[in-house]
Length: 151
Image 1 (cartoon, one colour):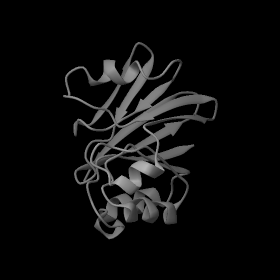
Image 2 (tube, helix red, strand yellow):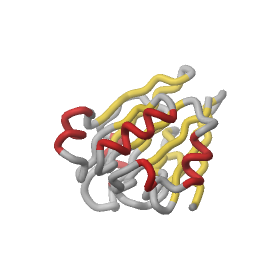
Image 3 (cartoon, one colour):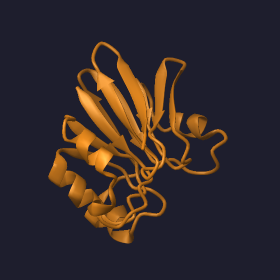
């Protein structure tokens, strides 16, 4: 399974998404957004591209905050993936978000605007970076592999 991952897009319309994101996401099985869409139209535009799982971020509109949860737990091909935006400064963010999930194989997050793709204590911490600069692809098979794609 292939998952397209975004966070911190900070845009108001789906037309503002970079064409490279749109092209890459045309071949994914699932789209995950880790918050800070800003505009509801962006969520709706992604939903027009395929199935979307998303959480709210700290700068999302009141309407988006009412529609989306703070965190989600996805089960994909027997893998457990936590999704959360994050909070606070970048230092220690992985420790803070890890405390929000019990047994997981990966955690998708955002907020720090710093792309991250590394395993700590058996958990993949995956931040696609800010959506105007980068996005991510997770490939799930026997293991979970992450790739950060710079725009």
